[in-house]
Length: 357
View 1 (tube, rainbow, N blue to C red):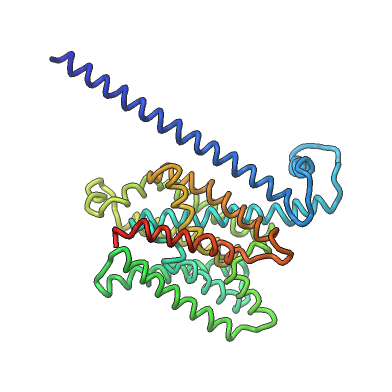
View 2 (tube, one colour):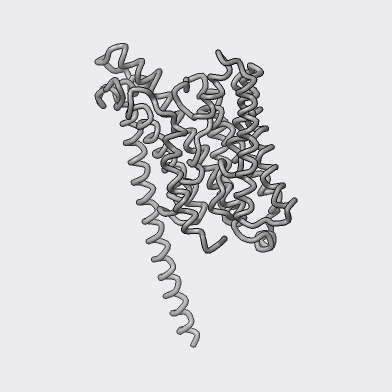
């Protein structure tokens, strides 16, 4: 009897190990392919444009920062790669990661697959803060602080409204986010009305449409540290998101301070959204679309979902920005292009989630 139990236990351990090995290999293979695609899109974004630059010259220009190489390129190629395209591509990567990681974190915290920085009003709230900073002629850091405060204010309103009406269902939370977004959009309209049409109004319209055309090395040096620190923080807390995805009672039974953990992750996600808004303006749907695409690849486990979201979001926004500046002679605002992609996807998500309403 004893040996039979031991054999059964050993067989079970072998089966579990085989399953773990299968899923681990599947995950590693998927992430490896995603990383290779991301690197390929990165190089393609530096090569393709109105001024085509051969891939070997791009590689030589990038390598010249670290190696001593003979100069085979002219000054125009160097300026296009290092001063125009590279900051813009890095900005696309940073903004995509910030919006998508914050969206995945919001969805895990609120246990709602329909939640995103846009639907919670965070993006519009951050835009209000950024517009006020523009009207006050503040520095980029001042604009970032006001954008963060605006995002926090918006998400607090979105969370307060369901409590006031005593209905905290998924659909009510989404509807309250839409209400707050509409309110913030009205404030932005008022700020546009009182703005100087020759200077301030143009900057505010730029924030609303969303674009990476004005990204420079100076902007990146201000915003990149915030996005890097925030992303690392979410990566460090991603296993906590699995616990917060449970009910509050189950999470508390595991020794987790639910309210504190939720506030910390909401604060970090709002900071990421505000930093993205400061760099590119309002770009919608990324925080909703990318986490769902990543779940299709690696599943719902946040320990795997967050790293996958980073790679998929970087690739997605680099492709979107490449199309935005290459499809027509006049650049298409990135927010408009992402809207055309995100709207039908959101309709599909609503269709798939209809049984929960």
